Length: 314
Image (cartoon, rainbow, N blue to C red; front, side):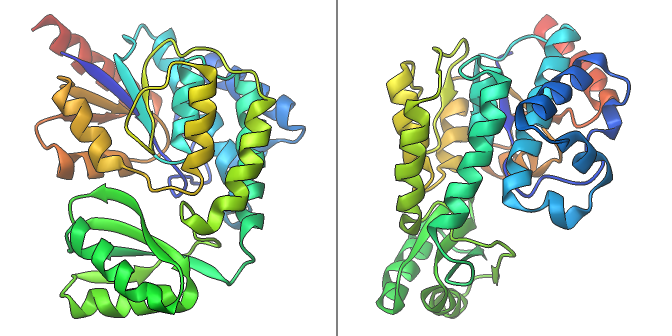
């Protein structure tokens, strides 16, 4: 049995996502530290909403990071074995690195709030967007974007699973790409309810701002390898981590390649560490032979711990 952990990105948040760990001292301490570092009560926003405010990227990013790291700490405190490798989807890469000891929780929540502000301010609201294309190969989606780029910037930015690619860019080019994808016979091509073309080259200003902020942030060598979104490599030095994270803001998330590399390296079991089960759904489509578990509440953590210990005993 070889265990990996993965950490979700934006879109997995929900009001009440900590309710399943009510009374867990490890989780509560983690969230208290996040509140203190941010200077406002992210815990109250997670507990009570409103959903619209929790859904603003400046709140979503620190909320998901704090929640995911709290769940990881709860896993370790419950006697869960440490993974041999980790990865995170987009924002989740910061959660993975925090769990791996690269950032302190206090620095991480402030860093991802800054990341959110930088990404949001890089492109005025209404200028760019994102769309999910379902049912075309990666190559076809890339070709569609190339053809649609006559109308402006549009790029493939999240390779999520076979037949599911997210594209991002300028509104006119995005609309053209959606039209071309439908012409190629995709099952669905739908614009996503997001406020910016995340992970596209339009986010270069955010990349530059992040590089400066990361240069001022204390970074430790990871205690567990973390595969980076941009190149599916582990970066062991502070400068390597800084460069990979800065590039990530304006580069594609290589999720399919990440899970394929885990499979190649003998990973048999993956725990999704954070709210929701989005990544487990993607992993089942990429590598159905890998067992995937969620620990989004204390009961799931206990059940997963039992299954992992059984697998270890085999």
